[in-house]
Structure formats: structure tokens, C-alpha cells
Length: 356
Image (cartoon, rainbow, N blue to C red; front, side):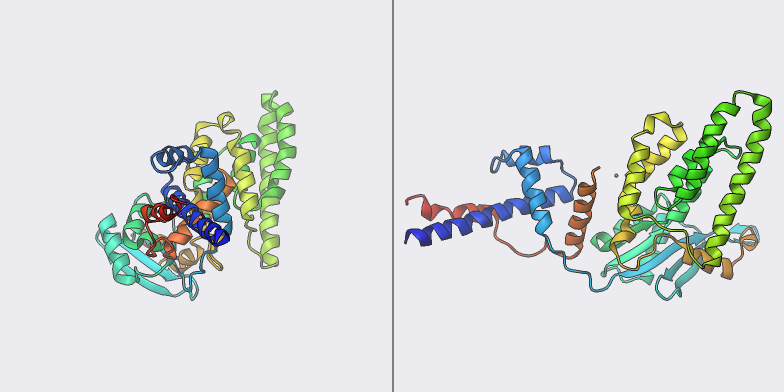
């Protein structure tokens, strides 16, 4: 009899702590800090910040998220052709797998409402979708309103690289060029270029003291470096290889190394690093979906063949990131929607034991 009561007690206790764990998950899903969760728990069942942290991470380690049976992967982009003197707006959706257009239409404007109605009319908003876009400021809100929890949003890494290059002046020093390539090296392997620039930067430190000598040297050094970069590109083309994308671990390390030096950089670089940190999850989303693209190259290629350019003119700790992605996956999989006993009902189950 005693053993049966003990077993029943342990089962109820396990269910209670499991329910508390689900509360932690829901709060963390909504970015509530561990300290704030601990404060909330003081009103329910006292748990310290450290206990909340350990129990949450223990639960997350045991989570098995059901694989999404079908994630539709698409590209979205815009062009701005002209009809006479009138500006038009071309909105396009491309199937990432088949590289075929899903929709390609002209509009009088590209307001959030226009984009929203375009997406709703062309895509099934009830199913999971992975969509690649550039950094249009209206996109996050529009996509969230259209797809809600079904959304997996990836920012184009190629577009990010273009923004990084624009952050630097046309006539850079070798030191500036090195910082530029370290930024480009966050997501793409530019180690060879960096190795060459490190050597040149050491030379520059000495030569820059003589303005006349430096003026001739910097021109020659940069021309030689650009030839080196061009040779690397030609070598990849001959081998039919693309520029290598870094692993998630490597990308995180490269970014963290730069962010740790934040205050030593010019304001433009600081701003760019903060922007990357803010949008980190949307820059690494492709790592978590098999076959998902990291860029909008496919739709850019489609644009280049369908409407030529000259025609137009008419992120916290690693484990924290992984846990947040996993929580989002759980939410998309409907794991928080199932009917379950309330926390009050869990506590009520202990009442029969109070008189023992």
C-alpha cells in the first residue's frame, strides 16, 4: 500500500514539474527573462532564477520537435520598372525548388497593404512557409501578419554583403579593407583574403608614416589584392564551385569575435554589427531547414533574364539562440495547442495525500 502511494505521489510530482516546465517554455517563447520568470513563480510556486534556468534547459534537451512534413520554400523580391514616366512596382514570388515563378505582377505602389494582399492571394497562408527576402523595413511586420506562426523568414545574405560593402568608402586603407572582409567572413569563408590583408596591413603600419611613399604603395597593394581576389573567383568558376558558406558554429564565432571589439570600430561598422545581432535568427534560419537557400540569387537571376537592369530605369548565447529556434519550431508544430490539465488541477491532485 505504501509503495503504491509513493508511486502515485511521484507520478503527480512529475506531472506538476512538467507543467511548470511548460510555463517556463511559454514565457521564454515570449522572451521573458529567467529572473522575471523567477519573480512570476513567487506568486505560484517559488523557484529561483538558477532553478528555472536548469529545469528549462533540461526540458529543452529532451524535446523532440516533430519534423514539418512540408515547408514551402519561396523567394520574394521587388523591381521598379517605369511605364513611360510612371513608376511601377513589380512584385514577384519564385518557387525555390523548381525556380519557376509563382506570381509576377505590376502594381501602382508597394505599400504594406499591397504586399500583404499580394501574398494572401498567391500563397496558402495556413501552411508552413520559408520565405527569403532582402532587408525591406516593412517585410517583418507584413509577413508576420500574413503567415503568423507558420513563418520562417530568411534575410538574403548576398544583400547583407552588399550593405556591408556600402558601409566603407570607395578609397579604403588596407586596415579598412581588413575590417570589411572580416565582416564578409561572418557568413562566407573569406579566410584567404583575410590572411593576405593581415600581411599587407602590417606593411601599411610602417609605410603610412611617409605620405609620399604610402600614396604609391597603397595603389599598388590594393591592385595586387584585387587581382588575388579575382583569381580566387576564377578558380571557383573553373571548378564550378560557389563561395563557401560557413557552418553555424563558425559564423557565430566570427561574429562574436567582431562584436567583442565593437567599441574599436567606426560608427558605421558598429551600426552594422548591431543590425546583424538584432536580425541574427533571420540570418541563420536556412541552417535549420534542409535545402533552404541563404540568398535570393534565384529570383535575381530570374529578374536578370526577364527584365534587364537598363530596362528597369525606364543575437545572446549560442544555447539561447538554439532554444529560441526550438521553441518557435514547437509552436509551429502545434505543441502548445494541445488540451491539458491546468496548473490548479495539478495541485488539487495532491489533496488526497494531505491526510496520510
